[in-house]
Image (cartoon, rainbow, N blue to C red; front, side, top):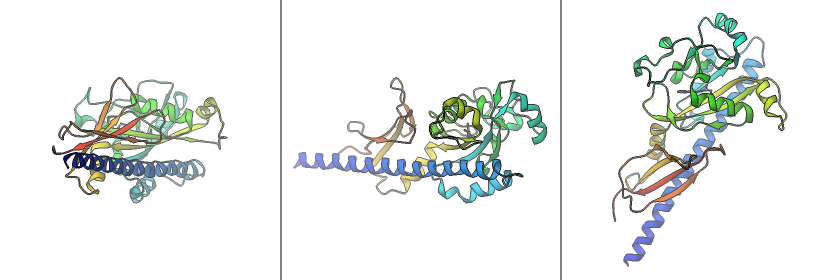
Length: 281
Ligand code: WA2
């Protein structure tokens, strides 16, 4: 009967949506665990050894060769915590100045490379990138605290000791919306119940990964069958007053929609997947 067909169609939509949401969430979780492990690698082999066993070349090769471990990421990078009192020495040691992050509101896309960035204005502290995977080499020397989303992520990561996510924003040298995942690196083994102040004090750097949502969700959905049948949108719903579409299209039969929940591991961010049929019944 017609009623039966409508119910079956509904069930198909729910199953396909839940499956896609589960695959996306699992892949995200896998890469989150590997980014966490990378922060421990930097702590052990860069800060834990004298001389350090990691330089840009080692970091670049290692992160490129282990890229398969971090599905959905477009690149990983490591930034150091540099207080203003150490800036001059830091810049002398590295042979470059700490740059201010400049967004495309102020400049042309092609100018958005650190060589064209101005030196960072005086601040209490900076977070210049010292190591980067080849895919995000354009952020080396950029002060991550001079970008609003990156700065908020850094502050939350070091106070919490957990992996934290930004809201979707336009990444440097990208035309897409993306998110950044950040883990703080500490110079001592902190007790699990360490206070925020102890955590901030013990912070020495920040390991971050960027996710270019459209191209990466696209790649993932491509691997699943029946891409012809449904269309999916991914939303950041953290702010009830304004949902942000991180991925999606305008097409599809909007008369029937199903929502699957997504958990990307940061309790202060909420996400969901909204699915609908491509064609009307
Ligand atoms: N990585 C790549 N592209 C970006 C970006 C970013 N942040 N911010 C804007 N465009 C080194 O949390 C520390 C990575 C920030 C980590």
